[in-house]
Amino acid sequence: MGIPQTAPNLDAVGAPLHRVVRRRGVTCQICTAPVDGHRWCWRCRTDRRFAGLAGIVVPLIYAIAGTPSAELLSKYKNHPVRSVRATHSAVVGALLAEALAAHERCLAAAVGVTVDARVVVPSLTSRPGVHPVALAANAAGIAVQQDWLVPTLDARCDRVIRAEKFRVYCPDRVDGSHVLVIDDVWTTGSNAQSAALALRRAGARAVSVVTVGRWLNPDHPGTAAFVRDRLSAGEECAGCPVTGSRCL
Image 1: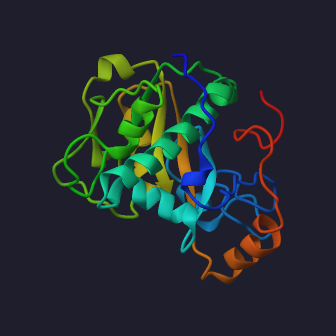
Image 2: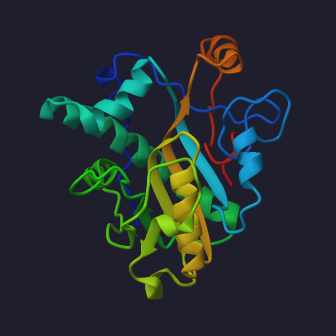
Image 3: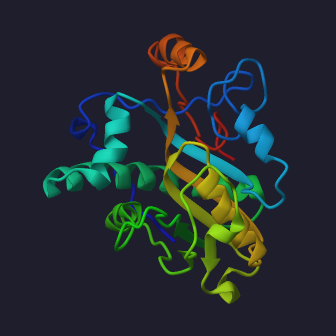
């Protein structure tokens, strides 16, 4: 599943994007949210009670509320001007392509199984048509299976992890495979982890998640300090987004 690697055109964003920080005691070892000496953030620690969650979660950048990084992940799908959507969608696609071309093998090494297929978390907000992140991925040369995972009729976009939010349309293809789940933004992770649960219950041998942005709210004092003292000072993952250092 070769992917052409294209460097993101960050001029379209208008400001630097902060790649995530992976550092024990500084950021959550699952979702890379800032923590204060802990291994996991409160949400990820609480969610560990679920059996069958994604084996690894890999955010690429921080989407900081009120900054161009957050605007990127809104404008690529919601801006009323098509050309603006297209410009920002190209950045989203290039971020995914850059990461997967260089590090999808690291995902495979982390969970011990080669990636067999990629899916996108379906929209749970009644958005018609193909999800914008799937369009961005396809335009960047990333093959995704758009019909393997579909929302159920009563699914809601909430902060609850429930495998029943999604239906696996072709469990025979999922059975025994490593499925990579792609999402645009991780806030609580409830929808991505619900997708992971649904895929695991359908027989997937492994599920991993790559999300373009990890949402941060700087109104939270701990998050504000993290943005000020670390991100604004230039700290970020300069190596593999899977490990935070060397590739696997």
